[in-house]
Length: 408
Image (cartoon, rainbow, N blue to C red; front, side):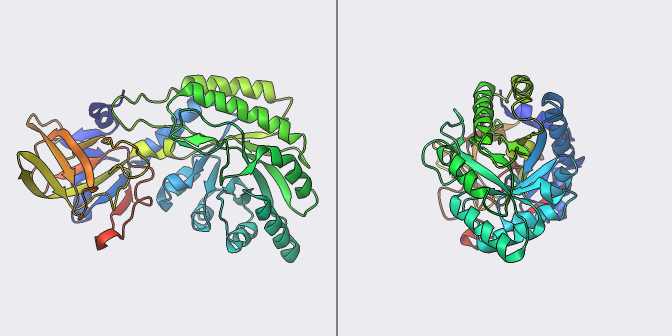
């Protein structure tokens, strides 16, 4: 079960200060003059990939979904430790192309690719996950005009969803992918073009903490891939089965058990070896690789008491970390794990709320949490901040400075 003590143990503590990558948060804060910052522990990121490799069959290819954390240093680190990268824009593609990852192992998804996005992706030689018939027609035009052969996979919108997922990406009408029942016809059309068919991308949902739900989705995904492959102009080079692996954020959340997932994947590989011979099975993960390796740190600039309640006012907030404020997908707001980073282990505790400098009551990083008693100049640390933090937040809101990022 997730609790603050467990989160602190993921890192280390030195003289009451949390450390990241061997450096205390106080040292790191001094380097940015106590401005808010994100810090990502490179060692924890590598350990997470090693943990995955331990449980997942070696035949499975691991891809990192850059959207979770596109910081170039983080992407370069992961490119050296995984088998491929998945991007959601031309901007992310340029980051991926600056790494050691071969272009064919970079794939682009997203329902709104512009003509320029497609042209740049084709020129770079990466794989494009086609989200619609119209996108396939535009790629065919690019192939005819340039003489290039675009690498294309079909993103499929299946008729099932990932149960208990934080965000469901499939089942019913969706902006993502081509409806499964339309894929056979689309594959016949693709065979008439100068496009290179590469495989399928079938992604059902994200942020799931139940192994049985993920296994059920993986079984259905590969069943569907086998059926659709019968209509393909060539055997699929790969089937990207997505990920959906969640991380615990709130009290009561249990970490995902990788054991049953690894066993399920091994069974599926054995069963599908004759039906999808020579086809790579790709597991695409983003949040799971980086979320727990990152923290967000801001400085307390004021301590005030309003009608008996303590407010710790910081120079950071929802404009830097929208998810921690509860305004990025939460229905009922819950607190992320939060601590006073330079007072770890303090015996003097109090119930306080951590708020930012913005003129809105939504600017709340911790609501009525038990924290070490803190003063002006102390450092607030928000854990589980390595994914969907920096780039998923409205930095321009109310004109405050943006935070810094560092890989340690």
